Image 1 (tube, helix red, strand yellow):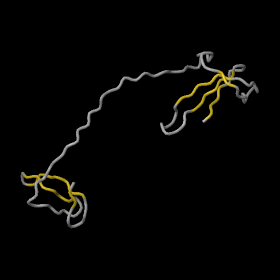
Image 2 (cartoon, helix red, strand yellow):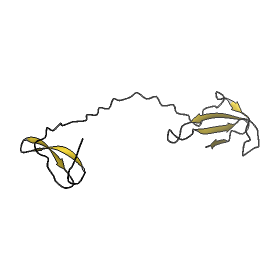
Image 3 (cartoon, helix red, strand yellow):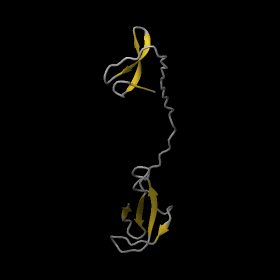
Image 4 (cartoon, one colour):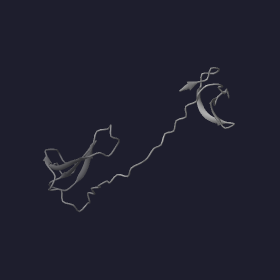
Length: 109
């Protein structure tokens, strides 16, 4: 990394008259008599195989664990539950509930 002696801005390597020279994009200063090292960053994206699990409305919730929580619709105190990451990775997951009596579904953040 090289910084401009005039303004302190970061200088970049550019080809001027067939030669690589450090050039300041802010003030236009061009370095002379210095050996310039040019770098390149190459990024390659590798496709990933992803498996998506879809929970449909007609699916029975009997495969999920039960917990003791009050249903807001029928006041039953038992519901099936599961967790899913619905926001950014640094946020806690969302808990989904389904009442064992009336089938009402709700979530808790």
